Length: 195
Image (cartoon, rainbow, N blue to C red; front, side, top):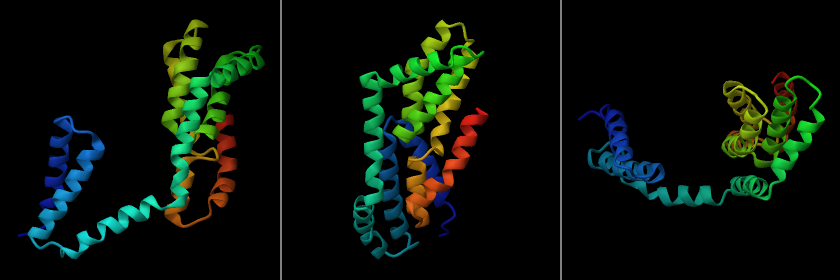
């Protein structure tokens, strides 16, 4: 029997798992284990490959570089709950208040700063969206412009050091995190200025 049917079958099984309401993490884990056992049963690869699974899991868990990910997320939650992000937005709004679209500039600057602190796009967009979107709508910005500014300011976090994307990329490429940060400074400043 050919192994070409495995990929479409796995994709269909993933969709079925997700449609049943299982969480994504459990769906992917169950599908991976089930597909591995099916592949062993049909002789696509030897059973000894499954013996390496615990080593891979514990190898990922012991990676010191990836330990920073939960701390970045925690920092973003602390900033949102403590109100520091809202104070930062109000301060930058006063600083840019005389410019046309000054509040939008303030949201972009706060997005850049929050991006450097939180390190993730989701945390930054949520924090900025909760704080800045109502303020921008209250000041007469159109909903399209306000949501566009919030989304754009959240995407800046991909390259502003210290970014989780850069940490994971450094880990996968076997490069120094410091070198990745140095390489991202110029593009991140250019991105903030362009926005």
